[in-house]
Image 1: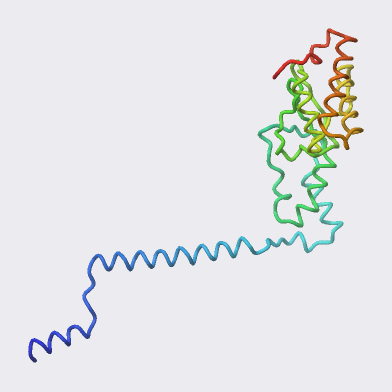
Image 2 (image 1 turned 60 degrees about the vertical axis):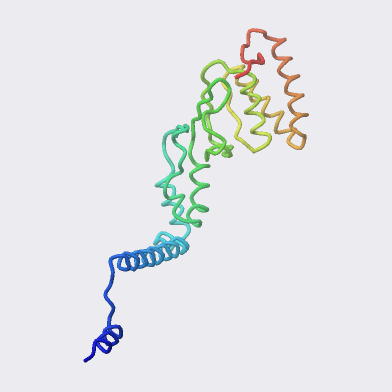
Length: 215
């Protein structure tokens, strides 16, 4: 066979693979595998999570929720306890069924420092208006109390209840005023509250918390 024919025959067969070509092909295979895994992961996330619990009768599910979620002691709410129990986050249905039991059938304790609750606005306790006991610490300042009152007016933030002293009663009454004036703009409500504060300070100057001190 002539050199020319040998060359043509060689070109018609499998070509030798260079190192650069091999690297490119390996990269393409890895990229394809990665995309395939990503699609499978997205598919598994989008599929609704099922649980044998949901096959049980509603009455039995509620009893199970109560056994898991309802405590015989007060639950302390802090900045660090920002997550809700796992059973309330399994899927949409278990959340709808169990979250109300957790929030309404437990008793929670929230520490109020200098007139402002510890949990942030994003905390799950922010809009729970029942079963919360306020534990006041430090000297409350009016600026903090006013901020708390505005949270209640604007976002439905929970308010204290069950006051055990004159100071707590005065704060309770301020929240009652905010509830009554729900339909009014905050600027109007704030004006009324400032007048209320001035009246308290005039009646008893010894109450340091009614002084308008900036936080």
